[in-house]
Length: 375
Image (cartoon, rainbow, N blue to C red; front, side, top):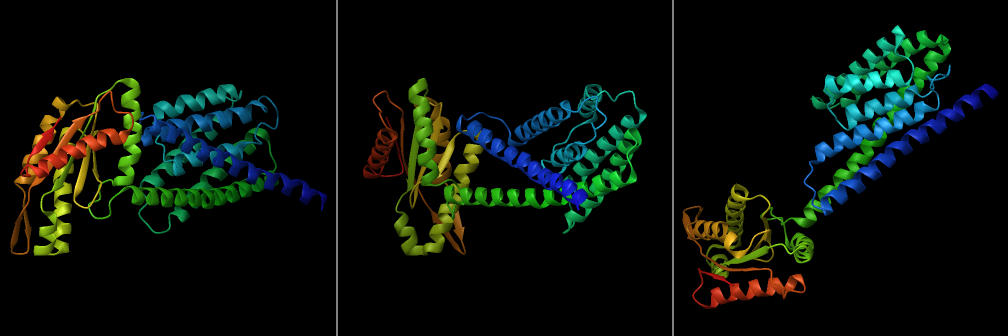
């Protein structure tokens, strides 16, 4: 009874410790990524994921091992290290080429005072093989049961690594099977736990994306506009940067709905949004495009003065006014009116710029439509 309690309690403690380490990772990752997005630092999420994941796990592994270096029980944290490797290879899907992976392993072997043991070299080779295998499985998931491949690979390479540890430290077969069994349990719990966290994150991202995008045209909506405008206005005024805005709407759009029906009106909005988005993407992806009302659209030009906007504004104006929208056997011709302005030193809040652009749009509509008013 004493043996059972003494061994199971550390096992349960280990479970909570491992899950805590990966929970902390997720919290830090989300926090730093949010800061990077808020600061508009142009860093790919994949690049950040790779570097942060590797650094976090290296700190985690080396910190734990530092307390055991040179001792006969330096194998005790082996399962934690294997789980960290699985986490980076499979769940973070970080591809580590050999010229990056090999130096890390060599440094660790020197740090752990194990470079002179042949068993350590075999263990290192098994570890690298496990990493690349797990990484390959994640990148080539083709069936509906990825867990089976995951656990088979984890079980096989786990037994191989623990076998070389057993030889090096002359562990008993009882200890070998016990630690191998614990590793399998850890791998199962890790898969369940991380899958749950990732699924929750995906749901949140999906809801956020849904909240910030117009369901009909698939471009960003008024909520996204107000959030982005608040940030860009603050950055522009504090750093004395240029920023311009264009607003346009479709002339006599109500007549389109009344004459051809609302489905036709939806098709018009979709094609207009598609054309404008294509033009912006071809010119400058940093320019922001929003549907802010029924037939009203806004375009933000961060870093642009009025003169700089001319090319894109005129291209959009010309493309939409020559757009032939075919619905069944009907051809619908539309036109748009525009208002354009840039940020001014007198602007105190984002709505000051918005109102000026809106007044310019109103001027275009009141003076014949199908024209651009700029000031």
